[in-house]
Image (cartoon, rainbow, N blue to C red; front, side, top):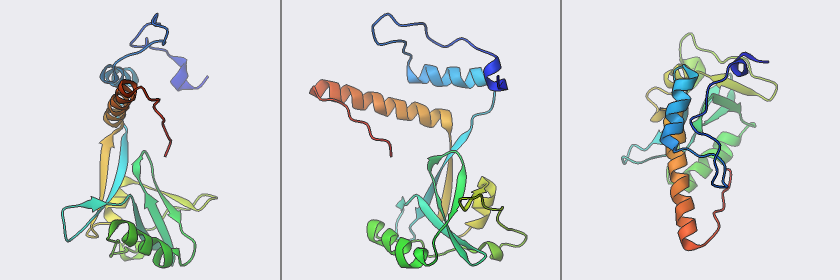
Length: 183
């Protein structure tokens, strides 16, 4: 058995008798998860493109160049930052125009890895994806209007559970089913 499954710790709830199975408040579950893991919380990341003409920020995808190739980093509460190699010509022909059309603004500074002394990309996997550290991301995009936000996973998970509970209560009060979609 793998080490993370060799030891057990008691769950913060007992078997339910209400016909719906066991349940626990989101905050209690998160607190239990943090104490049970005994490890620092992992972060999830979100990428923002700041607009120079307003305090608004938007987007979840940003772009850079390395070795004559274009890459995209998409992060909307993702635990790992990954750069994905884009097909030739897509950045300027398709993605930047689409970003401008959907948000009214497009990323104007496209950083190049080669312009950062001593920096290079890790080797890509078989699908052309390259993992990037948070520090490497911030260094690459420094001064470009791109912001990396790191949020503790447990707190994001708790917030999402609260929002789901509110949506479920609203659906129940309306007498309608709650439809969830994975995006």
